[in-house]
Amino acid sequence: MLIMMGWTMISKERVRHMTKLAAFEEREGKEYRKMTQYFRRDYVGLELLKSFLSGTISFAIVIGIWAVCEMDFLMDNINEIDLISFGTEILIKYLIFMAVYLLITYIVYNMRYTRGRKKIRLFYNRLRKVSRLYESEGRQNGLED
Amino acid sequence: MSDLLELKERVRHFYGKYEVYLLPVVKFVLAFATFWLIGSNIGYMERINGLSVNLILALLCAILPVNAIILFVTVIVLANLYALSLEVCIVGVVLFAVIGLLYFRFSPKDGYFTVLTPICYTLHIPYAMPLAVGLLKNPVSAVSVVCGTVVYYFLAGVKDNAVLLSEVQEDTSAVSKFVVALNPLTGNREMYLVLAAFALMSLLVYFIRRMSVDHAWTIAIVTGILVEFIVLFAGFLTLGIEGKTVWLVAGNAICAALGFVLQFLFFNLDYTRTERVQFEDDEYYYYVKAVPKLYVPTKEKRVKSFGGKGRDGQRERERISREDLAEDLDIDRDLLDL
Image 1 (cartoon, rainbow over the protein chains, first blue to last red):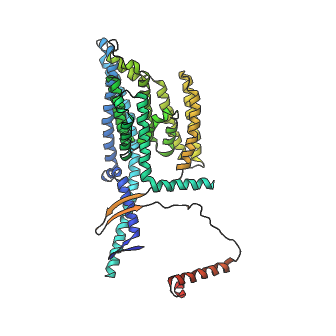
Image 2: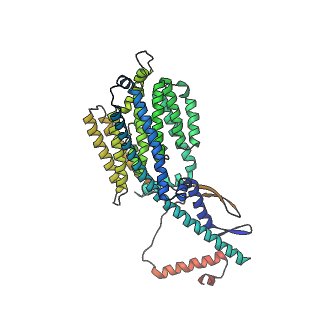
Image 3: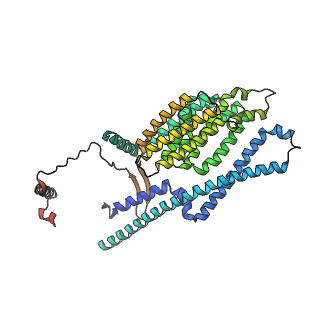
């Protein structure tokens, strides 16, 4: 179906595809852009690194606020506390927290990558369709000239 | 039943057509309700809890993305906590920082759920949130409900201990104020119980409604509500928490009804919206407004006749219509048979 516009024609089908492409790019494009730039391993690795940083900062904040609350107890018993076992206990808690947090990150971002790549594949298929429509329109215009 | 389907289709069409106006209105109402609730519950700083300030901020939220509501809510809550006491404000900052770090890693687009959770608590129907997340979103979105729940319990604790926290006495040291402010979170077994029940409910509802069985959504709603009710009821009994049973029953009944409303509105329905996009190629700039089509035209009646004139009658109708068409187009009828 073609619409006459001045001296040339615009394909309705092409505009329909282009509208869907533009809508996808505008709404979800930003979210999926990274998935086109990275391999799965790099993408998930980057997210794991971000989670590692945010998890460590969160844990440090929580430990900090706990220390403030227990300040009186800590100050009174600072000499009696076995610092090595105390430190090991905190370290074990930190490792357990990070293991759970990173595992969740790994699963979630792997799933997101799979879903994102699927959507991007559909996006590129549509893009190819638009490109083919342009080519056929070009040929048609050439024939008319 | 057909009336209901028609209504469903109308709602979908209405949303598709007027989405651009509806969303800001929804955001405005949500933001205003949230600011008003904050002001009426923990409004310790009078200057920022006035009606005019609330209205202006809610109007701003209407045109900004949904996470702007979260930003404004954070600022308003912290300002109110600061007016109460500096220590509580610091605990608030820490809490929001931790939630921000975890929340924005996983579900930065679920701002509605985070904001709605504390509102649902004040309406005694918090169970609606994990149910809605399970039905409409994915398991990761349960993080937003968890964040909303933690914030609610923290603020409820602050409200209950406001007198103690605002006291300026020598024997009330800064450290003890920290402890009082943190108590609603650290020593609150009810909160942990609710968090576990809500997380379980979200996951259960999500996985059941995704199963390929008949009436998956109905089974998901009923199972989710029942499991959450049993977990909370048993938990309250074990922990010795009293005075919650009436609202637990009533709230769950209301939430079941809400669940079925959600099922009616969202089950198997794509709320495709009006798209307004701009793009260009070598020759043109395109400004496209794509309006979703109405799938089943309402009140359209199709009359099918069976038997009667049979094939001959059909041919006759065909011939008549071709003749009409030829007349309309002002061409020879034979051209249509080519």
